[in-house]
Amino acid sequence: MKEDIRQMIYRTLMLIVIVAIITFVITSIINYDSSVKFILPENNGESIDKQIGETVSKITEILEEKYIGEINNQDLVEGAIKGAVEALNDEYTEYYTSKELEEFETSTLGSFTGIGVYLQADPETDSIKIVEPISGSPAEKAGLKADDIIVGADGTEYNADQINDLSDYIKGEAGTEVTLTISRNGKKFDVKVKREEINLEYVESGMLESKIGYISITSFDEDSADDFLEEYNKLLKDGAKSLVIDLRDNGGGLVDQALEIADLFCEKDETTLITIDKNGNKEITKSQTSRTITMPTIILTNENTASASEILTAALKENDKAETLGTKTFGKGVIQELIYLSNGGALKVTTAEYYTPKGNKINEIGITPTYQETKPEDQLERVINILKNK
Image (cartoon, rainbow, N blue to C red; front, side, top):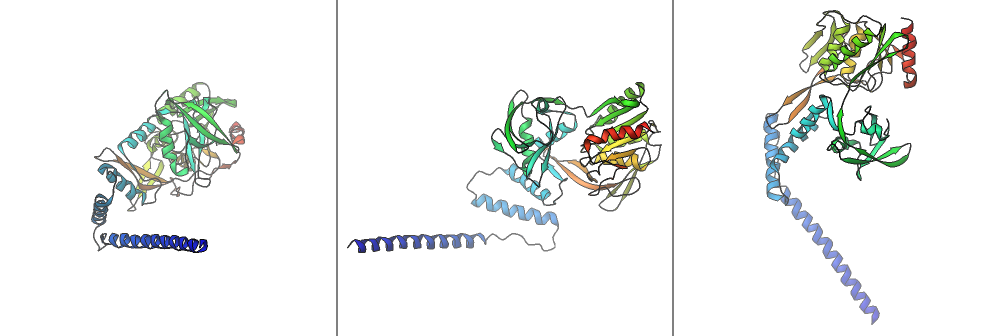
């Protein structure tokens, strides 16, 4: 009797399971069949703007009819723009919302609110590392160091693809604190950092031994050329006989500022940059002023020397106005144009590729130094030894 009851229960359970599976399959088939009724526009040789417009319109129609959540039209529009731009697979072409544009412009003006670190995504380890803390910044005071990995902030973890999200978060409001989870040499620990207004000093100078002047440029902002000339004149007044320009870890910035600095070294009408657009049109930039700086000069470079830094390096190297020492540069040889939009946002679009004064390609190639020196700790000492004999 008990065996019959067990068999009956077993058959009942199996029947329930089978019915559930059949119901799931039928439901899936019904949902699948209903979805194919929404036919997206086909490519019939129409213009790309019409294809995109019709496709996005149809997707929006489906969402409005089917999606159970709340739809923000502005978010859809900006999402569509971002999707179109990202589909180009160009890491330098970006769409900025009005908020993102404000942050981008602030970063080129030399001040922002945050903790004061330069970040870099590392796709190989899917992590975000600190390139270096800004001198005198809250990050430096808290003990953060170059090559520290930021695992998370206030309990939220971040990977390489989320570097912009992390950057936005740690900026925050002056006076507030953020707790960063750091990985250093395989050990994890938390560091609390107070956000402050960071006033960036992109150009700094000092005097080395043997009357060798030293100028470091960490980025090119709207005042970099004027700041460079000011620091150079200080060194000249102090008796500098030769010059070191440190462009290591300088990721670029405003190209016109790099060219203004190049003008100080080059004779009038010497070629400092060649630009070629998508149609093959060539534009040659020449020095606008007479030469101001004539002393022996060496530029320090490394694998993070990029963009505008490479333009300045190539302009002086190929016009025989400076030698270079260190490692090959990054190789970012494309130019972006910022196009402002009526919605308050902007497109940063790759519009041209630049070449050295002798017509050499920079993008994805970089600039090989006159003197190869791979050890950072030995680079400055070697520069000094070379300039002593100039």
